[in-house]
Amino acid sequence: MNKDIAKIDIDAIPGERWFPTENDFKEEIDLYWGDWGVASEVEDLKAVLMRRPGKEIENFDYEEVRFKEPIDVDLFRKQHDDLAEIYIDHGVKVYYVKEQREDRPNALFMRDLVFMTPEGAIVTRPAIAARRGEERYAAKALSDLGVPILKTVTGNGTFDGAMGLWIDKHTVVLASGVRCNKDGYQQVEYELKRIGVDNIIHMQIPYGHAHIDGLLNIASNDTAMIHASQVPYDVCDALKRKGFKLLEAPSQTEAKETLGINFVAIKPGLVVQPEGNPRCKELLENNGIKVISTDFSEILKGWGAIHCVTAFLKRG
Image (cartoon, rainbow, N blue to C red; front, side, top):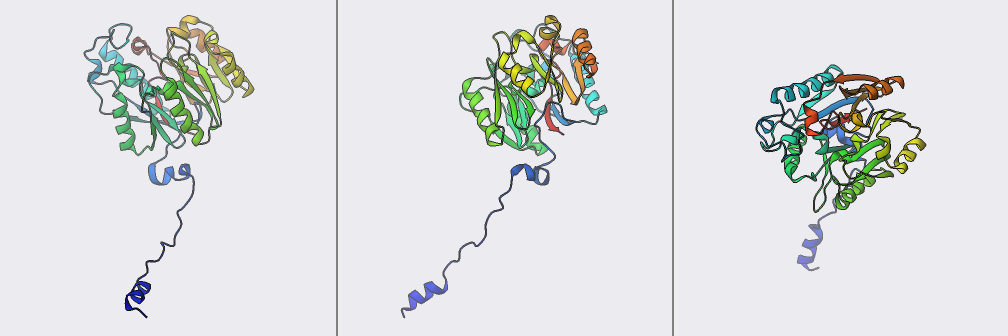
């Protein structure tokens, strides 16, 4: 026998002789990443990501960044702190984006930057040029915390996180409009379908409005509040077929100006709502929803409220 051939036979490299572990990523988040994940707007709120307003609110042209008017810096921060304290008092862990550009006063509106899923966060790409770059620091904070980043919206896509609203683990209202273009919509839609969301309810945001959470929000497992004239019939019909009672905001002023629909559920049937919305509050309470009111009048000057400043990291 040829000695060279024998040598090759002896030293033949074996196969690796193993097979990969094939299980669902969601099953391993707690083990390798942390206790993160969201597939609801109302299940018990456990952790949130916020941005306490920093130097970025101390000197800016309010008209250039779409604020209504100049702000009182100290009061602006106090109202944000008061909301964080409400969360903490109810057992919610509050994490912060500690770094941010000094020319981005809108950066406190964290829901626009992060849309959380059961498998991790979708980092968005804001539609407003004056907000671009905020998402970089949101991504850094998520990474530092150990929150998996499922997707970053790229290419020509634009998507604000408040253009998505969880109904249940298989159902999401996903909106298109001035804050989410076709490319951004398709990128997010693809990721949601990939992780098992098989019922995506499209919502067209009317001209003159920004996000879903100013028009539609969930207060409990069977109760939603809507700005009735601005929510498409098909969306209302889909929610009713899911068993939701639809409460129509009784005041256009409260819906549009003081953002009475822009609340956050701490748990099913308990919401935090901006003060100055007595009619919306009464309607919620008359339908079994407990309401905590907090002064957000200064932050409202930025056209955002409680749901806007809160990125959910863990529910349920």
